[in-house]
Length: 74
Image (tube, rainbow, N blue to C red; front, side):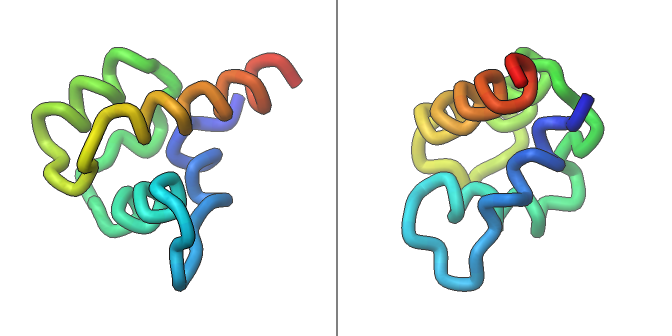
């Protein structure tokens, strides 16, 4: 199964137009991001405690919902 990070990278964009693209760009630059994880709690804990680039966890939740829909239910 594709990790959340791997999924998120499809949203990277040189000129991000939305919050998920900004999140993808910032996660790419974050060398501590749990790149192999597909665990919601591990990822959300990391983002809440270690990542200062997300303005709101709602962005992560929105990206996670897309990930769940596209990867887990494909």
